[in-house]
Length: 188
Length: 188
Image 1 (cartoon, each protein chain N blue to C red):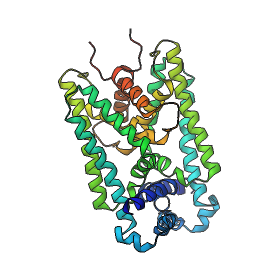
Image 2 (spheres, rainbow over the protein chains, first blue to last red; image 1 turned 135 degrees about the horizontal axis):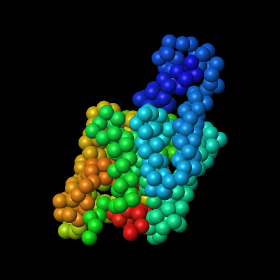
Image 3 (cartoon, rainbow over the protein chains, first blue to last red; image 1 turned 45 degrees about the horizontal axis):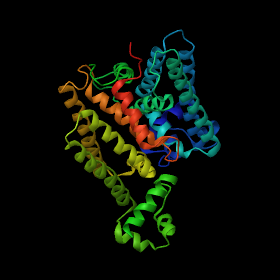
Image 4 (spheres, rainbow over the protein chains, first blue to last red; image 1 turned 90 degrees about the horizontal axis):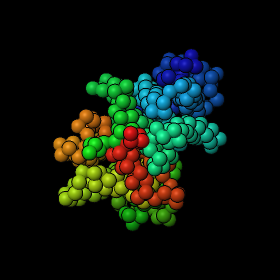
């Protein structure tokens, strides 16, 4: 039941917004009582925090697996981009709720989510820094801005990515990485 | 007075959210009456639409000027990225309101904003397609995804860009364009 409550809430928050969705709307959509809701969550905010925590912790877990592999930094970067795109593809509304409704978390919760998001960013930055150290990547680019550019391009795709569209999450990830690594300019 | 109402609303919507901000909050912050508000706007939604229209129309105007210049596609792309970054720098809360509160526009208004946003994207895509045709850019990249990657990286920066930080909007734009055009990979 907890899973069902979370799933329907992601869909309602994604479609109608967190503020616009009441606990009544959530329980009605499942045909259960408010008592059922309060058995699992103290408040709507606590439920929102659970959605946020799952989203970011899942990504951090996947990222740790990628980091611990023996592979080039390019390969690690690709796998991180692909994982993020798969998340957006498979959990489109989760991504929307994660980024758009963050403002409705209380301060302590927000701080926790920011800390975990920063950890994700720092792990990606480390891959880029290692690539610079190993001369796999250029020496003259600002690792932090490069990280933010890649994360931005990928995260932004929740605005437009259509799982039923012409290109798969894998195809889009390949194009992203090709662009970021090799650049758009024609070689001389 | 209309300008003042718009300015304070952007700041309140940006800080507290559109739903959480009442017309009462807006007029109180300016020390005027609700009558003043209704003299200029029929509703809070109409005011939100005005904010959205100004944001996107301003960008479209700037983009048209860039497109009509005699310069390389690379230069045009840089100028578009820099214009967007300047917007985020100078109107941080506007960018936040534009992207986050779009869901609160009514359907007809939303359609109008989507049409204008698409026009902006299409103009940028045209620059990339022209660069491909003129062999300034690579022949084997997907112009649409490249456009979305660049737009995504830039638009995302409203989440983190700090006008008081170490790097200016100009410096960040330069790094973005260098990354997107030349790539992260060390040359062989």
